[in-house]
Length: 609
Image (cartoon, rainbow, N blue to C red; front, side, top):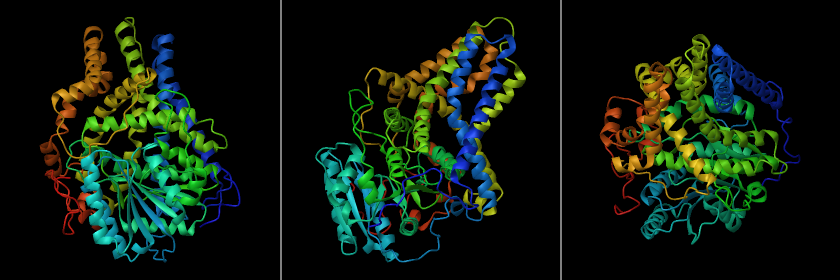
């Protein structure tokens, strides 16, 4: 086992390639973000100053200010990311010089446990992905250094039976080459984090590292071995997080979402890694962990009291990252957008359900900000995670107050058109900056254009995805508001299994889940029609998404719509244009929805699974 670092964590000790301390980068980012927020707030005040600033205008400015930090951070991450992508031969190595070379074939001398965490999941899909990972490790001659542990919290009898059959078949295929272990808890205290903690207490001392996977995770052996080699060469590295792309999907909802995520995450992550450096993100899956410091220093507290923000820490990942940094170990991201995948929710209603679980978990961070010994950058990251959701009610309040201002204002002008257009352009640029940066980088590279099917498809898909994102934004913001209001009255999210298979959303289900958005959008348009029809042209994009929430949920769940988008090449990702061997071996059938199967012969789970 690697001994712990001789010195405690420090924001100032880490060095970057040109010799300047990481702290200077963080100060520069803080200055850029603060200046941009101040400029945007000043521009908003100028826009509203047509008839003088009253208390309504000040309320609008205040709400606007709270919504800014998240978007401004994304903008500057994208700017820095684009600069690095255009000036560095290997952007990933530029932001993390300690990353092992992609061509490194040094021996694997450590032991790694692959942890697949499941809870009432489709055992066939889980086994399909694990089977592919095991086969690639065998082909690479490294299987003996890895053991697979399926950690189950399942309680549905049919899921438990399917898991046991899948494990038996995995053992039959690979048990002579690597350890295949299955353990199911009768209860699930701590949820996924508790499941991993129990593994650490039982068997963690037998391994150097753990690869944490979700039930829908898939990683190539090439990526995994590169991460292990990096960990071997960097004894102070505690967590190494890979970028996670969406697996090719026939879902008309998942396709634009994962296309946009694939575009934006590289520039955003490279820019973030430039200043976060050794205090990077951890997303709780598709990441490699050094077990000794994780076991010793990263046990999560149980939050005292009663209510939805007490009890087990739900969004465990960023807290564990902060604890790892507090212990003197680095947390790094490997900003390479290939070799690591997950499945995205297939429908809008499933996406909202997953997002609200994150919302509840991130809001718990409010109670963890005062934990002793955390680095300043770690506290800032927790605050950013909180603002990711807290900004939603302020954005909705901003639009509501703006509606009242338009409807009940006097006959004189209430905003200045020139500054208003500049403000709108500024906000849109910040919102779409990570994707625009990646698009610019791809268009300037012949290889980049080919990865997405050519310039025409890339630009057309990007425009369509931007429209989709604008419709989705108000739906999610209102969902956050409704959910956080429920939290105030003690209503919490039930931490249940995720629906990952393609299925239709019918009118009744869509209306039952999305009536607040529909009501909000209808009321907004009616208000504007009665009081200020011209004002609808200014703010209609926000309310249009809310008004169309139900039909959007229904249409985006139709298999035919997903099939058409794939057939015409819309929202195609590199994994569809030129799939890697890992993806190709899964034999995913697009666009027709079908049950996943192995391309390696006998399926690992019965069709009844």
